[in-house]
Length: 115
Length: 116
Image (cartoon, rainbow over all chains, first blue to last red; front, side):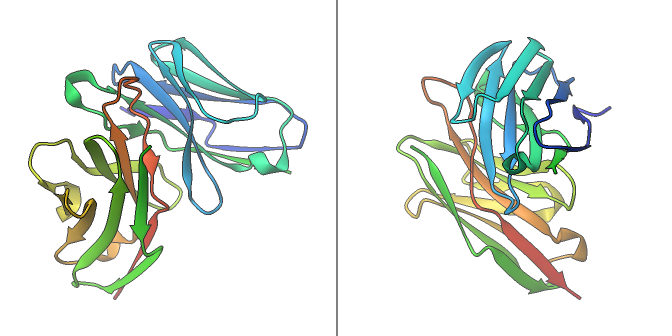
């Protein structure tokens, strides 16, 4: 069973389009995250939800909008895609403080290419 | 605010040699520290974690790391490198702050190359 899954794995689209990435975890965690990994492999937090409530919203263009329909799912919608949005996007989940544990479990990533 | 610095963006070792990947952190409160490994075109896999229990932490695949508060370091080691260890390694820090978000701050990553 895959703990954290993301769809799609690859996404190629043109500038100006709108696209979504979906994430699901079956670990029973309350907290989920979106990270962006750039071409130099640097990882940066974008958003985090705890039990469907937004708790982290870093300096991200408002073209990016996360949505959490329930605590097992966290989706990322991107409007008006730009070339600079090309990156690998990772979803992660964590018990985040439950019993003093903070490790995060990552999905396989979605490689977004904007042309 | 927390930060992580990984010394050496690229480390090359021979198969069977010692692996040492360096990580220094900055945190005003007791940190939780992690090492993750990323194989090509895959997600991040947790290697090991420090959560204020033992300072010497053992992880998967024969890796271990030692938390040294006086040096603000959390270096990753493995006695004998294997070809399959070639990957990108990330050190990360979080804290048990009042916001309790568990946000991870990552280092820049170190590419480990293992030569036959």
